[in-house]
Image (cartoon, rainbow, N blue to C red; front, side, top):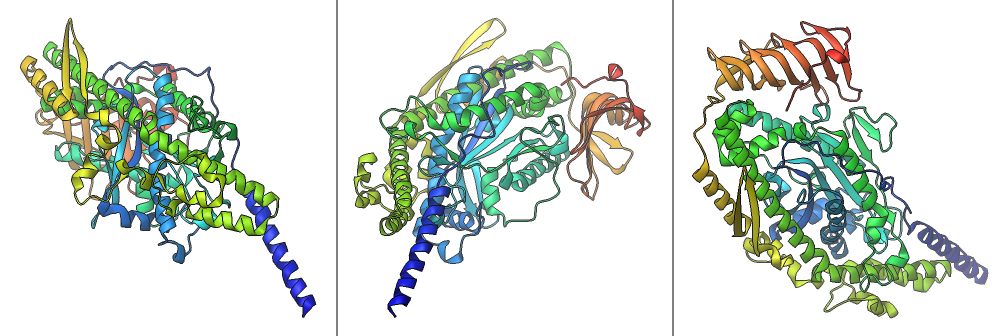
Length: 640
């Protein structure tokens, strides 16, 4: 009996020791990200329009009270890095982690914003915080709180941090954002015309690839449908991360993907960013609440990610990326002008209206840039940021103790600390929290969650109005009076407003007071056709005898969902001359893009061809048939 007791004790110590060794070894992350900073990379901006933003950063900022339970459930079911046992999905600690993802995303996104804002021209980096909502038809979804996404932007970034929902795995291998460990999720997308072969999707974190691809495809479908219906393009893309957790995990399609740093950089595929659990430098976290001049997250990830964004901006055609977004923005001022812009109509009256409208859009961009800075100041430099740094510092000190205890093989203490780590997000805080609170184990419980700590983040309001005014709560200066100087031709106009709604009313009033009559006839009711589709489409541009003619934009779709978009010159209802054509077949992944010369609706002459997963090629076409390699010197590209 005594030998059996010794054997059981010995076995228990072996198992516990193995567990602790594993915890000690895996409660760490990567020292460097796959994205590395490069100071030699600077922006080359060849944009013709000065109304556009270069980058819009979207992120989850707040959960509406009605969406909390559905969000918690979706978060636990669709976990990244493993499967959460059913018994753990409804634990209070799991819901705290679900909230912490939103709370910490609010904080860490500001590092990315600040870095890009420092590297790019003034007023070209904008923040777009999203509110998470729910209804029976859509499930969990999100929409922007500000008007930022109405401004034309070259690229859009979806960013958030992530933690595995099961708190018992905190010290194990799944991704986590806790203490010195951060797992970023990162997506970069643009208008589909920038990269038709991937519907505009440029880069995505691995787990989000399918959701991001589906989102880009849906966005393209909605925009094509609006053009066909002659209705405003008002589709709002939810955050890719929220779409991911709202969708049951599916087998990934055979998508065109390439790895980070792939030597085939010109391959038309989505760059797949791997899940990285990055470990920030501990010495920068020891007194983070007192000294945050050096940003540990910027050093570990953001500077490298910013370099990657700058490289993207240098590689793409800015005017191609923003052409249709500019048309949408113009439509808010003047639908008639928007159609004339789409058709690239000439004439002094069109140019005068366009100059005025783009000057006002640029003014709106500056106003939203000021709001973004207010969000940054309220979130990062204000009380929110202060409490978050205290929390991160406290979490780091907890991990340091946990790692030391694991090395000492102190089974009782280590297991107790592990239990307390699991309780961090389930605890309730009543005051400020610092590293000193970790001087004994009971102090760990006062860490709580940032959500519970800050009354400004309270979402359990009886009124939806509180959620709607979340940005006012976290950034008191957001609704401050902002004054923007608009420059148009030889004149300057100062527009002052409190809140964007008032500002837009003033810009619309100013536009209507100064606008001149438009000498252009573009109504979008002309017919556009393609030889492969029997249905008639719609043409925005020059018209002769009811058929597409001269410069414009056309779209046609059949009953199977195949569609063709064309921007360029037409004759007798079909593409004829220089232009760009997107061909999307319902049974294929991605789309094929032809740019060059056309005749009777088909590529004819020297044409640049882009297909999913391949490199762009210059080919010679005759009546739609590829007859061999083309002479690049004879290629006539579309001017946006």
